[in-house]
Length: 263
Ligand SMILES: NC(=O)c1ccc[n+]([C@@H]2O[C@H](COP(=O)([O-])OP(=O)(O)OC[C@H]3O[C@@H](n4cnc5c(N)ncnc54)[C@H](OP(=O)(O)O)[C@@H]3O)[C@@H](O)[C@H]2O)c1
Image (cartoon, rainbow, N blue to C red; front, side):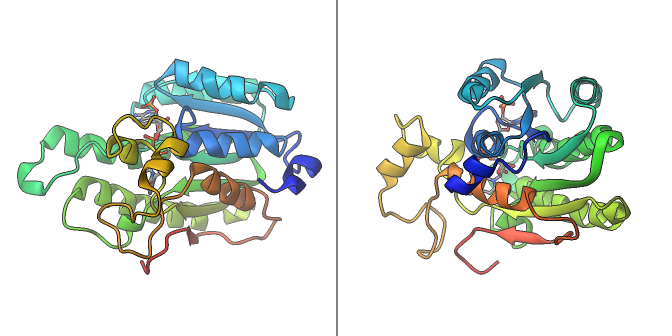
């Protein structure tokens, strides 16, 4: 992480909500934002993982509120968003990061409930969190939605995830159109392949991103073209911080990609 962020702490006094911040990309984004001075509200279903993230920012002098909820559930999500707004009067950065691939096979072998649940987690979740935090989003707030290259260009399996991320793209654009009068910027961030849960599964025994990266070495991540590179989640954290700190009037309704293949 660039030392400028740590020294200047441009997000001091601002509140950032990061969903799915218990592990993987969300954890790295939360750490990057907190390193730049932001107070945090972090959410997912697993309290122990959120507490580990909370502990990791304990020495940074920022507040860190934990909200445990299944963010595809409207009642639970409304309740946790209300708690966040009670804790922080205003939210300056919202990172809709929580996501999951619950179906990875072809349509012919898919389970209808898991197929639809994938759409719920990846699209309904970001919609619900945004919907319930909207009244508390500050003038000039930034919304960053964690999308995927497969939301722009589908593969030949895993259709529920592709449909979901494609829907998320359109949600980002709709929101950008709606929210510019409030000077709120809304953008997609496509990480490209990152050494988190999916790749942990393909590297048995490797628990952390560093261990996964070590296991893969210079190998191309499976099912990607040779130009692709498996990244550490901190690389995504750094880019999310860049987006979160754009000045007023910055880009909105755009898609930023860290992939290494044409999309
Ligand atoms: N890793 C990649 O290569 C890659 C590539 C492109 C896009 N992305 C996107 O990047 C985002 C982060 O992915 P990741 O790789 O960091 O995944 P990850 O390591 O599996 O982390 C996902 C996070 O989302 C939370 N989550 C999942 N379902 C949830 C639910 N129903 N309610 C609340 N929280 C939920 C998880 O916590 P709990 O399970 O405890 O709830 C976890 O904290 C996702 O949107 C993913 O689609 C990742």
